[in-house]
Image (cartoon, rainbow, N blue to C red; front, side, top):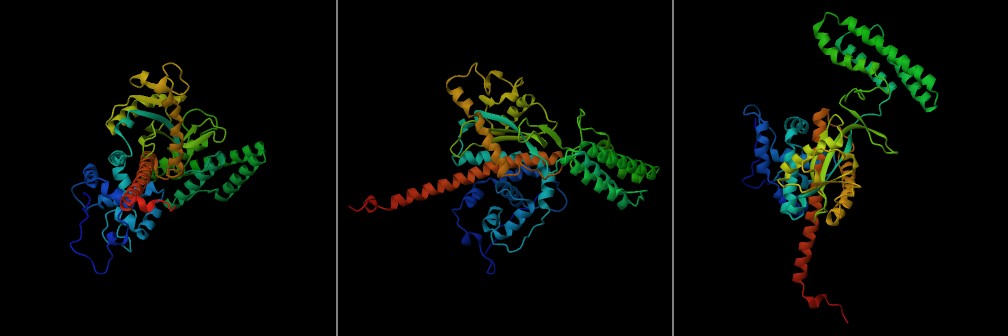
Length: 448
């Protein structure tokens, strides 16, 4: 059912403190909360809910929690714990009185992510609207953009053959124990020892011994797979439970280090991809490719992110540019005049190709275009801030759906950090101007 509305109290509560009496009403979070169009967000999210059943949590509360989480780089548990202690967080999410206990279900953020994950682009659009309304961003700044890609790493360990084979053996043994399938031998103890010794041999550069331990693990995994297939033969219920894990285990058993085609890099996150970075300090990263679009110019409030999207399948950068530009124009409502990209976008199929300028390009680069092309590399610090201050450096959400959500919300959190910084600076300028008007100039003159 559609989320319930937060009702304002008709009178004060003698046993509770009003938030507007204990916080600074000129704080940047308070100003931001009053400027966000919560009613519009409610209208956009309404189609995601049914007309029947229990009402969902209030839109302002849940959306506010998402914004605060990614603005301050907190985890789900961290934002819930801080909400109880921080009156500014409570005011931002629509509370009138200070709450000493959490009145909402902690798993609500997970349920809302699954339900409205595809609608979270509206938060990116709302952040750009707020930046424009507060003067941090001008409409003309949206005409010239910079596009680049990065990697959003998944929350997995570095994949090695020994680790993957050990996990497959352990997971199949655990599932067999839960379903009451008695294995001839689980190999839990010897497999753990073999994986440990493979790591030690690799460190000592004794690769023949390491390969011997990996072969040992691969043989034991094959025995477990065949034993389970024999035990579940003719039982449709068990076949439905074991089919997917056995397919994953068979893929891990058969894959080689330098084979072509898709490979499995994690048992719990099979969607993880290996993406070559071409950098000495980090040749490969394991996650999903993400495209980011920013303003080319540094606006008054900073360099804002206009579009963010996860790109599963590790596509070539140039093949994604046309779709990215189309979605960016739809999100901002402004036609893009010039696009600045790096050398990885050679051979793109973007509309108006003469308006796309690559790093190192000489033909057609002069005057203002030359200056703007030099600012193309300014997108790199933006990516760094999204990774260090946000959640783009480690994605804990599950599946492709989680990849899309984390990429968009990392951009939303970055934009709201810039807006809060701009509101704080703007408030300081207003106070300084008021103070200067109140005090006569003669009173500020230094004594002779």
